[in-house]
Amino acid sequence: MVTTRHLAKKEEILEAGLELIWRNGYNGTSVKDIVDAAGIPKGSFYQYFESKEDFAKEAMNRVCTFAMTAIKPILSDPQLSPVGKIRKLYEMRIHMSADEFHYEKGCMLTNLTGEIANSNDYLRKLVAETWTRMIRPLVELVQAAIDEGEISKSHDATELAEYLENAFRGAITSALSSRSSASYYGFMKYTFESVLI
Image (tube, rainbow, N blue to C red; front, side, top):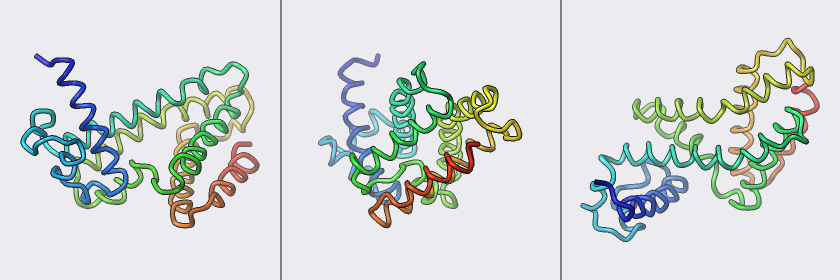
């Protein structure tokens, strides 16, 4: 039987390990690193996770849940049009990158994609599945913008949402290397002046 104490400790380990993987990468983070950060014996790790891959899966689910929760107020704001909501979503992510992470941490899923794409097929597929879940609200907003006439009906909602996310992920990488918001400025300018029309 899973107890409240067990779940609480699992959350502590997840939080500690997630931060390490986010900063150091999957391959740069060992199980020992995770248990040391969580303050537990190495053997205890396997009472909560079957493997390091299982830990990564749970960490990605946690990131996805956090992201979905964070965007709910924007998605439910009746004062914003679909394009207005899209703008707010990206403004929120830029704020996190610049003001909360100070350009020191990128998108964990983007980092993992580049790191394990050719070395771990299980995690590669897991990252792809997580991206599909996380992009769904954006696809729905783009479709709503098309339906309401905010942007051209010639657009395909899924293709356009994927284009926006790919462009933004590139902007994140550039912002990390330059330690500036220049790439974000370019993304917002051309997205809302040239693409979403």
